[in-house]
Image 1 (cartoon, helix red, strand yellow):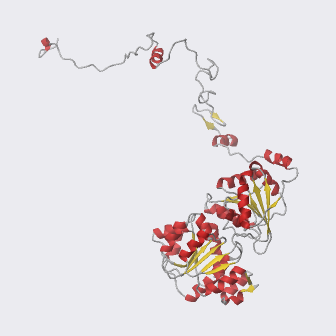
Image 2 (cartoon, helix red, strand yellow):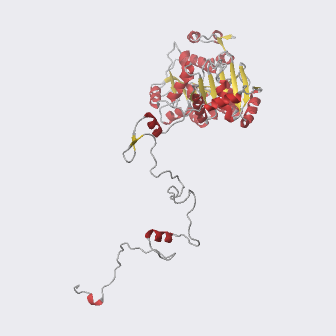
Image 3 (tube, rainbow, N blue to C red):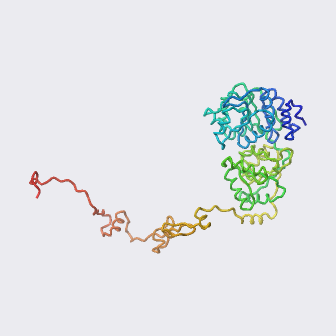
Length: 495
């Protein structure tokens, strides 16, 4: 193991590391820090959970302190771009801890927070800014962010930013940067498209490759259970009864799927929170905070949140739905087995997901261990399905249940939904059906050979017995036409 003391870091940085209990560097840190202290560009490839944040933050702090410059108003000296809010917040917190004992300032810029606060922070200048591309482009367009004074640019999880469609925002940001800078690319996976993008931004980089591309953590035990889509919820409920689960992450492909899993778990007496893009920033922070503190031991997330969840003590990861992009599987199970701990990854595979499973096994070069369904699964599943999630009631039903009286149109008080003044007649039924004139849905009988026309209907309503097809007569007031007077009355007085 390589100690931090042998990497050329200052005493202030070593003291900050000792306060966190770090003495030995990880492989990615041992290979990256010396090259970054020399000012070289770097292309780092390492799986998640190996210490990439410290690998680029520690030497960058050293260089910023050594240069002894001040950030210009509306500008910064170091810019770190991250794909998600959670990852940006995590990187900023690490930067504050590593920069203790220095005068460096740190600020975050991402959506879901007050843009006025972002403008205030940048107005006086910040040393280190951790941002998501979308909010930063907004500030650039409004002339509240000037990036000409940047010395160091870091792109963390560059492949995820490409997957989320940030390529145009990245190119927009790079156009605002000075040509003379230090650029760092870090990612867990490095497909050819990301490498081509990196070649446009970095110059003669030092490539650090700790593990093969898309390999998974060695300390994660990986299992798969083949189950139908309809039985996944029952299987998840049975699995979560295991007492060995300390904290567990449950991944779904969609936002609505995450909310549905949380609701069904609540119906079976299991508390869980959801975190995804539709949640507001306070909701996401509250859910992550309760999960980190252990108040809620289950967190249901989508792939977009997989990169920013760095919580120690995650013992299990459940893939409720297999990802359609095999690289996402690497990031999902990388949330466990962190900081030298062991972890378990359990995947549920339906019949329509077998293709995704083959892609995952081909990419990771590892065969997942197949685990059969639990014994007596049918009986246990029937018990679980009998406990349904709470049904969301309408406002009228809630008012009726709470005992609050409402008034209908006649001013009468009643509880519950308002009765239908037209009886039980439904949409599409004939008017005479509910009155007993003919059976429901049966057409009204007409005399043989008679054809019902608009004129016939009109005559029937007026009560006249005119021949069929005759135009109806109008007896309302009509405007009189102008007619000339008789020749004898012109010019004379009227009688």
